[in-house]
Length: 122
Image (cartoon, rainbow, N blue to C red; front, side, top):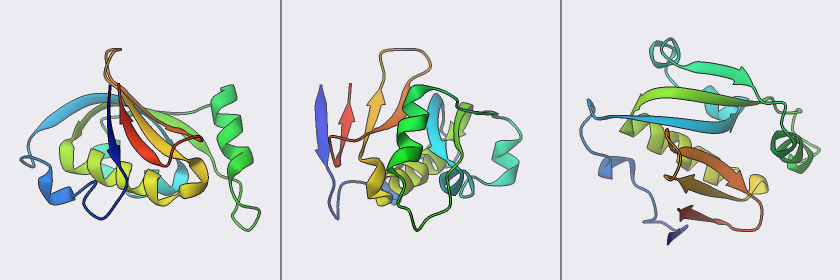
């Protein structure tokens, strides 16, 4: 298990590899993060609303001044720069907590976790 603490150098989109490098992954995001995915990339992804207890907990954590978020699961092949931008956006939304990247299942999963304001890699 490794941890990367959130900070100015924690994630850099420029440290992402080649634009053509693609990874398969499954990610729990909100509608704000989805807006950052280029439409041409979304065409090749499976995107569905997440009705799980984890999604309901994320919705409860959203600030009252914000519209109720729609939590969704996306799955598919994405370019590494797109994935890193999505993770940066998840971290920017501090009310969701930190980010867990679990590489044990296939495809790997990315989701938020309340108790850490960091990135955890499993």
